[in-house]
Length: 376
Ligand code: SF4
Ligand code: SF4
Ligand code: F3S
Image (cartoon, rainbow, N blue to C red; front, top):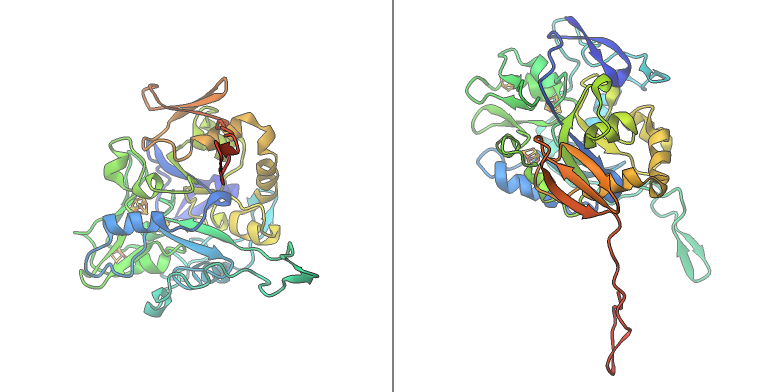
């Protein structure tokens, strides 16, 4: 085992291979507060990459309702059960990661899913905690604050320290040095399924027809053309932005992902305590209990929620979030210019410009003698 640095847990940790970061790291920010669980992302991916034999059950992208939704069943509960409650001191994780807790003779502490665990991809959809606790107040039915759920959109995290890669005895899984995308080599794979067992996010899927494992490819053919993946381009809620993340010490103010992750610390990794340094970052939902969110996104949750609640007074955050979903191209830099925000490609050429505040047009309530139902 090598010693590597994992900035998400605030310390060094053990990993099967030496630290070797890619030249650029594929990364993404999802603003959970805007997700409407329309599943357009899920279908965009499904129809593009997993419509073949043996792939019927595969959802490289899925959207589940928390706290009761999972795909496969209980993937996060199982992962947390393996390590126990997350023990943080400030921003430093005190417990063991999945690599450090591996059993004798294994590389990762894993948990193999059963076939049935994939049987109900949308189980728990829209189930809120405390359902039935509606308050009957005279003629009004009120939903008390305690009732909550939120939608969690998930893809492979293209982790800095992938458990799938560490666990494969064939060396069939690799991380591309040019962009950090994690791929499973279909020719090398022999179907050992150690990767499926090891990935705590359960984002490697076994194809029983082809006897190989398959996973989200980060839409690398699009990324190579400087475009965002299919599930990003098709997102109706405009909750997603794909780009590249620097290490904390190299963070740039004008890089959209760096700004949200490192500088404003508004977007947080999913289950950082597991030790994989995942590269999909979430703006946490503001309506869920902090204890639940802290377990899911780590100790930065309270600050992130407060920052998001105050975002209306923060022109740069509002501007940057307005750029999400406004261009199929990958934005490397951004700049606020007057009332607009512009995005730039790797060479510094402008690729998109949108108003930070969308103009509203108020129409007269009457069209001659005919009343208009919608006056905006
Ligand atoms: Fe591998 Fe899972 Fe990380 Fe994706 S999320 S890179 S499949 S360990
Ligand atoms: Fe599917 Fe591409 Fe999204 Fe991965 S990045 S889940 S391959 S659409
Ligand atoms: Fe390796 Fe997973 Fe294939 S463990 S051999 S990539 S099924």
